[in-house]
Image (tube, rainbow, N blue to C red; front, side, top):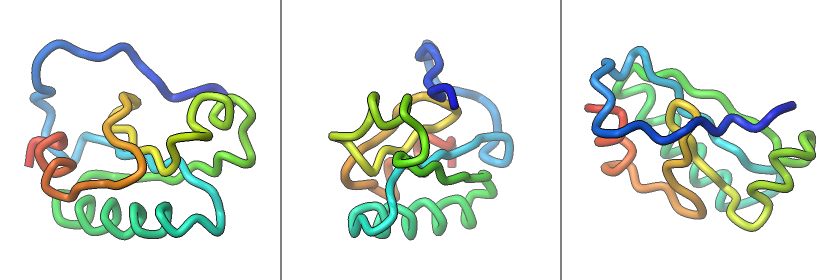
Length: 96
């Protein structure tokens, strides 16, 4: 699979949260990934944003890019956070 990174956009994205996608990149057995998953799940349920999860152990490209940072959270393909996910910061990134 190819990495999800996109060029960073200037300024804030004006799309509503329901049109945004959050991607959690992690691995099985990672307690920080479990914590991040709960934050992402809760914020996306609250804001209406969709989310997906990618397993770093199943994708060599993601493994090469993010192994030392997992869990990694992307918003619309742009890296947002790693290691710890702050719910308030994720809400702001989604425009909520």
